[in-house]
Every structure is written in C-alpha cells, then in structure tokens.
Image 1 (tube, helix red, strand yellow):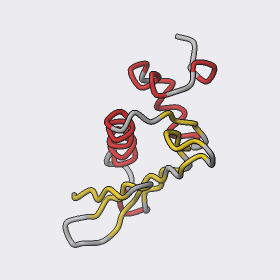
Image 2: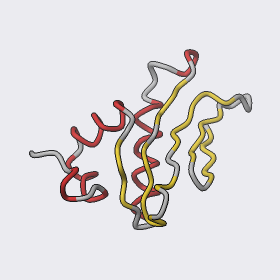
Image 3: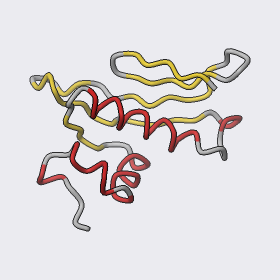
Image 4: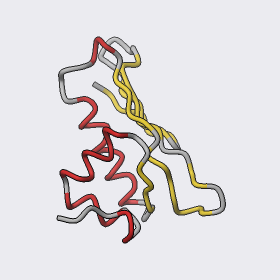
Length: 99
C-alpha cells in the first residue's frame, strides 16, 4: 500500500496502482491553520483491513507536523478522536471530548 499526500487529501493506492481510499480535510475559510476532517472513505475492496484507521493516523501526523487545528465533521474521524486522547490536542478546547 502506498499513501499519497496532497495539500488537503491523503490517498491510499494499492500495489496495482489502484485508488482504494482517502481522507479529505479542506481548509476552513478565513483560518489558514484550520482544516475540517470532512470524510474518510475506503472502497469496498479495501475494507476490513484497518485502512480507515491508517488514513486517520496519517492525517493526525500530517496535522501535528503542520500545527493545524482540526474541526471534526466525519463520524469515523470523530470516533477516532474520541477513542484516542492523544489526538485531541489538535482540537479547539471547546471541541475536545471529556475523558
């Protein structure tokens, strides 16, 4: 599996060069250091192998490296942030989950 990072998307490409999923995180208008975790999607043939979790982790690493603040829209990513307290420093204080 290969991961391709673009400014507002990380895509997963299988060993045959076929796209199998991505996570998109467009910028928040007026806030250059904020993005919205809009969606994570894995094609049916890529499901069941932890790919959504890997895409989310790569997004978290990307956001940390660039000192981004994250707004959560995608239910899957929201659940991942709830389950991983170490991700929550990327959220605004009022958006953090109580642990």
